[in-house]
Image (cartoon, rainbow, N blue to C red; front, side, top):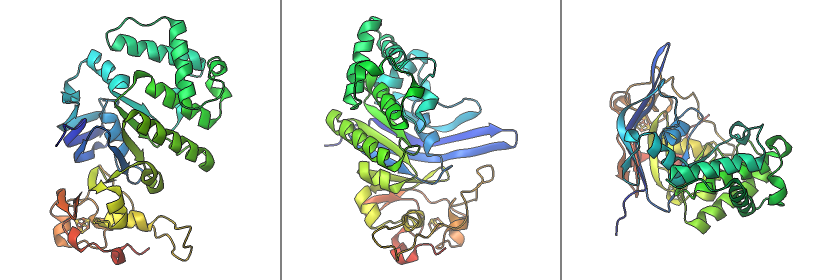
Length: 338
Ligand code: SF4
């Protein structure tokens, strides 16, 4: 039995218009997410993964950001056609986002209780209800703080963001993100700013919350370890395109795109220190002047003439989707040498 996707992105093209011209930041992205799926989007900084995530709720500066083609549908509804009321309902009660730096999103002049109560009351009005009284919103905020395993949630309501540690602030942000009982949770580098030990606790918390509420998760990270810990499906992005998309275990075991292979080879293996991490030579291309054909071809050890002339389309190879003319030939020994 097939179900309708909760999130359906088709042929999405997004550009930024600047003084120097137009940067094509997303170049024909296709991505469907089924209800209950956990999808990790991985790629180097600047590959367009955060922009893609923000375009789901139109949380982009428009202009200069401009969607030049394609569609984004959430639960069948066209996000691009939503008016302010529908967008307010979508943000929070349909889709919630957690960001890398909680301090950017917690208002420093509001106590935790004030800030959370405002969001909870805003969700009430966005869904057509009367905003609940402030004391009830504070009670709900305390429940949510307890759900993210913060000790003394009642006392925390009267504290300010600067009085909390980075890990506590991230948990407050997660609690706030859950306040509208969203169906899709987007976590954009949620642990990048945290110490490694704190990271593990926050990742476990997200994992538990997703499982307990059967949430759909879209996790953005440059860290394959983080993606592997939480996601059953992975989409590898490169320079505004999807390079490979499929089951995480399958892709980790047998990548079919030279870029995925390069990313995996670049991860240090602590269990086998004799296997040195091999960085991918070169850089993400300047999206003002992207290379023709396959955007990875200037860095790809398998590139042939066709790669510089013809853009590869996503096609099914070996149980996943890959955008590479030579996917069938990709083998571990072809990993890029530094
Ligand atoms: Fe490399 Fe060509 Fe495949 Fe692009 S299409 S990843 S350049 S082999």
